[in-house]
Length: 565
Image 1 (tube, rainbow, N blue to C red):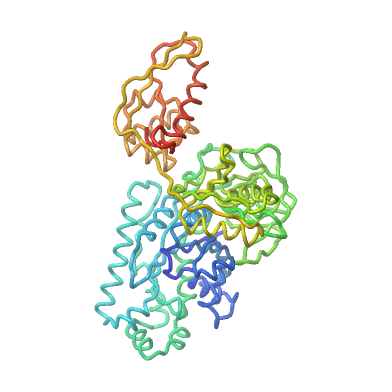
Image 2 (cartoon, helix red, strand yellow; image 1 turned 180 degrees about the horizontal axis):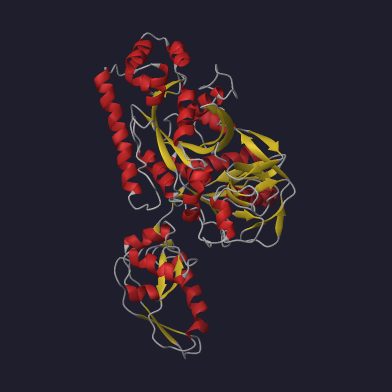
């Protein structure tokens, strides 16, 4: 496990992640050097190649020799478009390091900030690669001084983001900001396949002067030969990203709320391949031949074909049919995958993205919190009534593969409503239903999802039970935004031990007495029981909660969901 690196490449849309992945694959001898940068090997679906963007996170495993030792690098190429942010969040759960790519001309963009936040929330260490440096030289004709200032300002922006996000994280041992001197920043051009970093300049004797000269004289081929991008980046990955043995003792407490003293916690911290199997599913994909493939991180034990494992939240066991590693679009079957790796298995029919799969019953990992919620809804209906059962099955499969999509079947109108992160997200899903499943569908106009919220405290409202013997008095008031944020980020939930929940609510600004009376949290709304010494309240509480949840799901103003009350 000391020689494994699990990394994700993340960035704003069109900053060059997939082109960079091509270079790394070519460097590892997996695709031809000539087509690297144009082949976009990690965009494995037809629609990704057509649109020229990554839609699904794709995994690949490769080896790289660094300081005479062979390292296995499991890489996930993630999408940059904001609509597919869910894939980035899920990928971060499986990896220990994130290579953040920034376009030298555009600098740090909104999505750069989002992917950094997603990485740091999962306890993933960042490093920076500034791409498209060739554009500064050839298009903007910048001199050495201007260029240096521009690159330094990009690094400063990224560090400011890291500092702001990491200040509340107590479990990070060292400073995670990136710097040229430490070798955690690389520069280069993924399109023209060259790259440099401080260690590589010392090794090859190339400096920015030489690079500008070769670039200006169009000697890009020579530039690539003298300082190939793949070596620079893969060396950086091997040297600066933590291996599972370093990372897991820090990451496990962050994503798992189980007993830290237990034997299971020990095997996960030590990445023990002989321990009990613990596997966290981060992605579900469909293969026309193999069926559902679950990809995820093996935290302890060794996955082997034929094992019978528990899937959290479901009864009985699932039997593993095959174990493999992803190589872009291809899946290589292997006999066993030990702890510390990213594996893909078939046969886990009950698993969804975020499931904990293990050989013993255990506390599941924390669910993967998606920062964004669905904002746009479309109706989808089958053109032919005969296709209806198949469409319902496909929509359920879509919801299983992508947890950021919500599917709702409206019983009153018989409509199928599909909600996602944006218009492109829904367009891609409906196009795939048409092309891959061969179901002709008609889609309605996209509508924006709204939320309702009380603006001030209400008067007291009286409700009576049907037998007129019980009277309830309820008031509604808006909740403090800090508490809403804490619920959305998963820092407060009803699944937590009561004491922990109280402390978390008080930290977010709720007063002590109120936090002790929390009866239920529904979405981002909290029910407080302020009654004193009333008997038999528990018997009716379930009905009160049911009524409340119904009212919060269909708000009074426009039948939209209520939040923050």
